Image 1 (cartoon, helix red, strand yellow):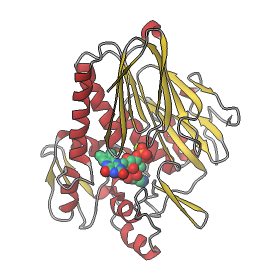
Image 2: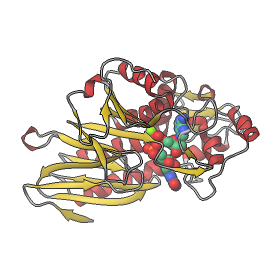
Image 3: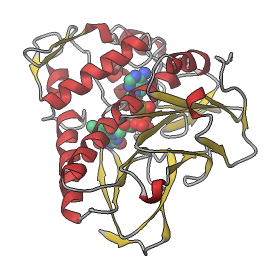
Image 4: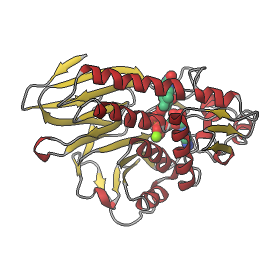
Length: 353
Ligand code: FAD
Ligand code: MG
């Protein structure tokens, strides 16, 4: 644990960690407790200010570990692994945590017309992007696996709290949503244990909570796609919020001059190809922001923007490959562009790509 913070001194948490999307957060505060642990395949940071103590942070991380143990496809005993093993055979009873995350993900799948689809598991496994075995599968393999990708074949029973995948071979993967949920859950523990304000940064999946002294807003910097971690192109300010980005720059490999990144198009089975470099969603809850950031990235600028405009508590920033920042109207007064090589192109109308 590192303890830092001199009264009245700006504390800058530089999120140079794996997966960092929103790159810095700063606030003026008294003593802070800052701790980093490795969970969910990334470095997870928790910073707590007034009322914060190490025990609360320890308990929050225990909760994150519990969520990972339930939802990781890399842990054989997890509930998600159990659901996947029983695909095509029988429903699996799961914890309220896992059920909630799956139910919410399916809701976002419906909203996004299947752009977010947690049944991409077989494709994620085959591509293995982010691991040493990452490779381009042959077309026939991808076509074969696409028959296993269909969120409408995830059957959930709210009374029995069970999840069933209709077809043998189907696999769910909660990589696009569970970090956001873990951040929400960590916040609940911290607040219950008396922490008044803090920052949760799970690999760039940011949650800031509590009110700042003197009503100062939180300020969250947004990663420049394709720049060094820690470089940001603009700052969002506001009260309690989750700020989550999805982009081509997080996990990828290159072959023949083409970048193969980890966000897959459930229709084609290939990494999404549109003009976006990243999509950031700002929402009141982490799970929602995480699910939507992946969804709108897959949908692309025009459709993604249109979707966010229909959701009252979610706003977004889209960054195109040619460095245009497109904001939804709710961020107009909350976003400051700090890197003038980017331009803000449209704020009110649905842009066309
Ligand atoms: P997001 O945009 O939020 O999510 C992208 C991820 O979602 C992809 O990596 C893929 O897993 C999945 N996905 C891709 N396309 C779609 C789609 N269209 N719809 C729905 N989902 C899609 N990483 C490790 O290296 N080792 C680990 O052991 C490990 N364990 C993890 C355990 C948990 C519970 C979680 C939540 C994540 C874990 N990760 C691990 C990280 C994970 O594999 C993803 O890389 C990470 O969650 C991506 O998050 P993101 O915010 O960068 O991107
Ligand atoms: Mg996501």
